[in-house]
Amino acid sequence: TQLLLIVGQIVLDSLVAPPTSGLTCPVVCWQEGEAAGSHHENPTRTSKVPPVKVVLLVLGSLLAAALVVICRLSTHIVQIKANLQSLTEENNALRRKLPGAEDEAFCEDGWVRFDGTCYYFSTNRLSWEESRKSCREPGAELVTVDTREEQYFLRSVLNRKMKTFDDMFWIGLTDSLEEGRWIWVDGSDLSESLQFWSQKEPDNWTGENPAGEDCVRMGMEGGGVPMKNWYDNDCTSAQKRICEKKLQRPKKK
Ligand SMILES: [Ca+2]
Ligand SMILES: [Ca+2]
Ligand SMILES: [Ca+2]
Image (cartoon, rainbow, N blue to C red; front, side):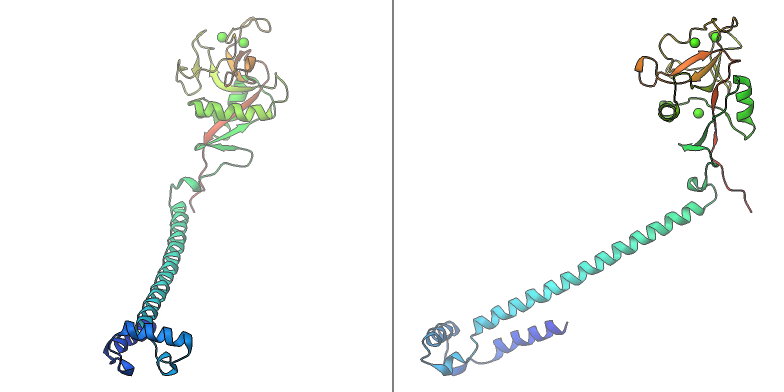
């Protein structure tokens, strides 16, 4: 502001003040002054500041003042943006503390979180029925594959975990009630569009158990076909298992 006032005063002075040295034309004055100054023939005229120079000086000052204002505004905008960022983070933190907030939920140690669900990949082996019981103890169930994304997630984990071809995991799918009718442990029928049988499966093979194969385990992708990693198997054989349950929430105080 002070700078602007000074600049304004200079403008006024240059307009109001009468021409000095008896010269009537500022341009002539300047031209003469320049010419004289360059030859050092008229020291009295070269000591005056020509009005055109004053105008240039004023314009320069105004430009400088404008730059200062723009610079200060930019600083303010940066500060406002930083404040907004800080408030957004604070808001998100408060939201997480609200009852039912998704991010407050968690999976217990040993369980893997994916898309609002916790999964457990066992290291010990049990029959299919025993596996189901074991999953139910902590309030879970043998896994049901409800989406392609869930299948993709499970196969990705298994691809990392499995050491040998036979190192498979029970999932919650069986046709023990009616041969060929596959039902999930939640009672729903296996949908046509969401099946991931490996090559030549299910085959209800009777080589190991004359009762055939009525339970499903998930393993390596047969023939290297991506995602196709389901095998029906003898339900009494001991296999690892995958359990799933909803995200846990802290107990209310
Ligand atoms: Ca599921
Ligand atoms: Ca069967
Ligand atoms: Ca089979």
